[in-house]
Length: 164
Image (cartoon, rainbow, N blue to C red; front, side, top):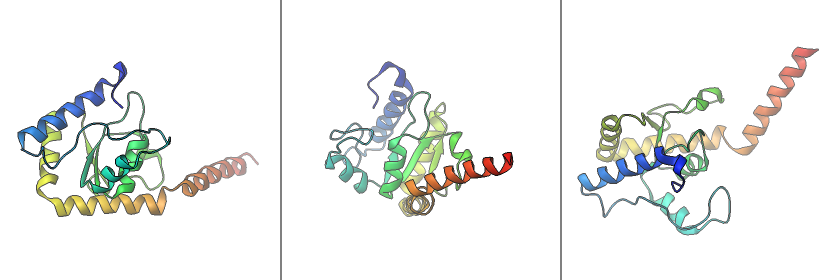
């Protein structure tokens, strides 16, 4: 969602993406914008899910003052290659996502870098596909709900053991 005033960073990335698509004549092969209805684990519109699963590259941006929203996890679960602005929180998680292995991080203050990364992966579809599958597999192996609960319980247990 980009509708609120505090998501100006997302609007910027949407505009960069639209500009890239127009400059490269990809209007017939790309979609930018909201599709269907539903957000934040509400009732999903299957048009949105179909769009995710049909995508080769998904560009997303974190919300203002927030990292790792539903768009990241939904995108990773689609198997498409994800481009997302750099985040700190992923370094704190077990089995963190790695740049150019599981997804692509871009600098949200550098449009030149953004365009170069997007152009590279548009031209190298097989490499983008491999990164997307690697991100997908990393989610399935290490980032499902049971993995997160197990991680939290182990952290609590280690803190309790340290206090004894």
